[in-house]
Image (cartoon, rainbow, N blue to C red; front, side):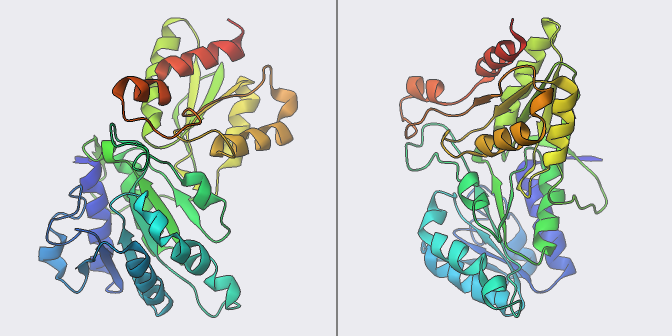
Length: 325
């Protein structure tokens, strides 16, 4: 095993796949000459050249459309957005072309493409640069949505996404690019749609994904001192979702708390809540609790931002509520 930063794991995954398959290439804002806005493509221009690592104008609709057409023509493009907030400019291409072309063409075309970049809040970036759209994309038939929480998962899942024959939304976090973790020396691929139990427990299930999982770990440590055992499930893939892993855990712990860095209405947490009450209602010893951001645009003020963003104390309170303590 070796230790890599999250950004290095991303770069390794892309580079390995580009060496393996000449139809794979990267395009996006600042991915080439600048080595990526967050250095997730460092060194790739030097190795693969300007025809396979392509700097684009600040025109997300344009280069997203070019990539979709390229994928329909037999290539496997990786589209990097400087942030998924900017993907809203290109969302017509993602939703109305990439996600639908297989069905609309009666299977004559597929669209093997990865759209990747940072998601969620990264501190004081204001209301238009701190948004999580995982549930938006997951609501679209034809799209797969991946949100890894560590370098190991990021590399294995990104390689799987690049090899997938359908469009994949791969959402990272600006605040995780410097995180370090162990990654195998040799090649490995993680299956899309399979969650991971990051911490086993017996009293309550906590389901989460992405960088906010760190708050779940902090909460679990606090709860352990009070003799409450929390099981933490990392979804890894929002769609397709590993419902069975969640249900199996809930049938064991009889309590569920869902932690998500997104607005509450029609959230991923809301979907999980429905699935559990539909398929494991009789196992629940308490109503399901969900923890999300406040139902407002992200504030710029650090004091307000701290209140807006879910944290470990929120998780502890929710767990104690379902534990009736």
